[in-house]
Image (cartoon, rainbow, N blue to C red; front, top):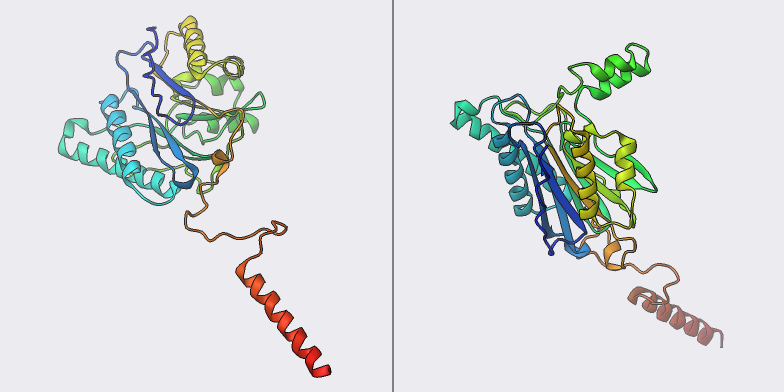
Length: 313
């Protein structure tokens, strides 16, 4: 197993992050990852993280992942509107790009890829995914997968819970990693892209990865990630060192993006993305700043009182 490709440092990115990938035991790298900054409006600069995993065993998985990742990022950056709309629009554009490519070149017919994208602006996380590439959040020493797994794995695990399959049979079934949804020239069967964001807290850590990371069990992965004294780069170095030491004979391509939320956030960082830039200011009760309407109402009341007293006198 080769050493991971060194991430290219980018000081312009708005959050501490790092990325790396290895080919594993595969003959070629079929994963593509992208990290880019964009204008997040009132909340400041945003960060878009994308990983595409070309379908192993299919023709030109590397072409599919690179094509979809590039078109997805370019389309997202060119669009206006809300983050969920831009993510959905970028997915549609990248799907169209793959269909166009296979139509022009019949040799590419059958290629496909998964996609997972995390979009962070301020303390809000928007996401979209197709396939089995992963998005994890580390919080309070616990890991939680945020996106759906569109492989057969959760189906088999559900069968185990219902007593229809043994844990060993579910784990060793050759169809466990078969995809129930992917980006191919056919319609996309399943898309996980909620309209509402997840709120990120200070100290949260996000892990975006292809399914090659499955060689590490969750406890080992948590043990590596759960160290807030290390930078994302040092954490990734340890993760890939451990992955290399396993030397799994069927190790797949593995790509990882690690993003850290600062332990403390400034007032600017906490601005919500869904607040329109041109929204009128509304005074909260008790702020001590009267509005124009309240001043006029008070003056009118005073005039009415004076008129009433004049009539009485």
